[in-house]
Amino acid sequence: MARYQIVTAGDSVLRKTARPVDEVTDRTRQILTNMTETMYHAHGVGLAAPQVGISRRMIVVDVGDGLMQLINPEIVKKEGLQEGPEGCLSVPGFNGIVIRANQVQVKALNEEGQEVTIDAEGFKARALQHEIDHLDGILYIDKASNVERAE
Image (cartoon, rainbow, N blue to C red; front, side, top):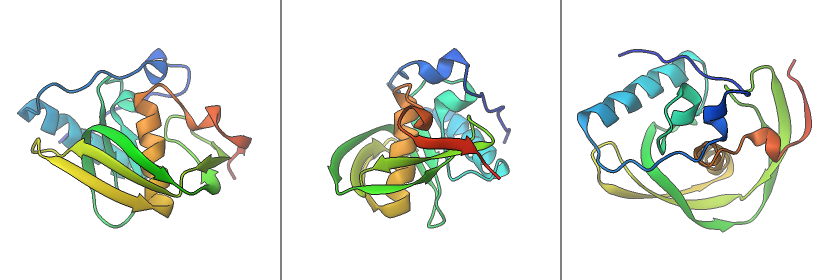
């Protein structure tokens, strides 16, 4: 396994719409493994491929209830609202308040190329929305109020 360097705000890859993954290969799985190691090493709960300079639609998320490695994730349903703090490994040292859906349903492929559906609420829903935003070139600071230096 290898860790990637996390790119930070100002890098153009973070503002591009990531390309879909056409086929799940050993290389795809290796990228997901490396992203996972990078996320855990940085003490994050999620990481999108653009955050490590790879413009592909892949994310990894672990909010404490198990790792999700998702390819071509898409939010197909949103319900309710939640408001809460967010930070980002690509915007180090800052956080802000973001309004997001409280419940989401996400369809994606897993690391084996099988279609999966994830129903999430609360913090897990927030993390999925945050990472999927990265795939569309959106940073949390684009949606946040009260962005300030983290203590």
